[in-house]
Length: 380
Image (cartoon, rainbow, N blue to C red; front, side):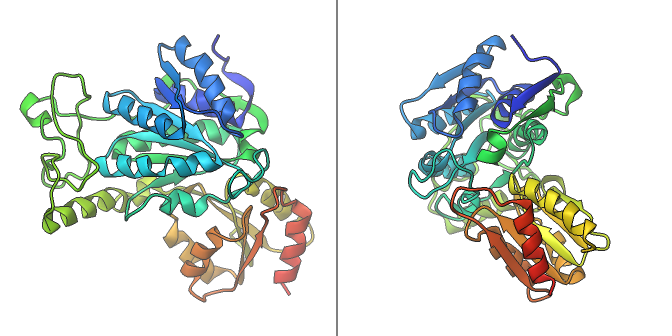
């Protein structure tokens, strides 16, 4: 039975509901803590809406089957955590190169290796960007609440369908296992993006052949009566492998251009209390919840503190962080790792203001009072 419009859900459960609202009708994966509830709920909910769920033999099979379903024209998702995300990397690169829409959920947990499977972490930030080999474009979004998980899952599917690229929903254990009230906005009230393909049969045989100004292919689903070639090798406009340096450069530049020329559409972020802020806290995902509590307490103590939260983590909101660094006296980055996002912030600040880190990698949560103490330290 479907949920009512308002429900008390875990972040993992809200992810499944958002995916179904966006049109997901295929899920393949392998259960792994702390993302297992996504597989469990997909197994229950997909048959109710005419979709298919399959538990594969391993993590590689999980993403491979989802790619196959997407090529056949079905909106597909897979989810994982920790070691499973590492195993999916090669196929993430394949989907990026072959331009196959796909949503991959990574509910981060403490690591490396099997680490602390049930404990919070945000240690996959750089892996979501650079985990697969070679230069490649990627879109990564990160929610900080259960409601935002629902909304961002819909957005992840829309971005994937619009730009024909894998999109990673980078959650963490905090949000994945958090329970909050959620409005399950019906699909008919949401903006839902569906992929385009060429209606002309002959044109549909060449989806990678771009028209002037076109950056995104229009790919007819396999099984639709139109045959064409898909490969993870560098390929020409006909979809066949090529060793041409010129054609490879054209392909790779287009893969990046379809993302970089649409940053205004892709990059989103949240700002709080930055109008008069002297210290800006940059954070994301589950860590933002402690930051918001810390900012309230710090302001009650007379400290001028605000928050900048990338919702789209990759591509990173570079222009906004550069401007922020020129406006404030200090930036504090709060993240549940040993310092990953802080590297981007330091690069973009470029010496305009000092950048400090409050990180953690022991599987525990950074508390608001600890952030307040760090704010006192950096404000001296």
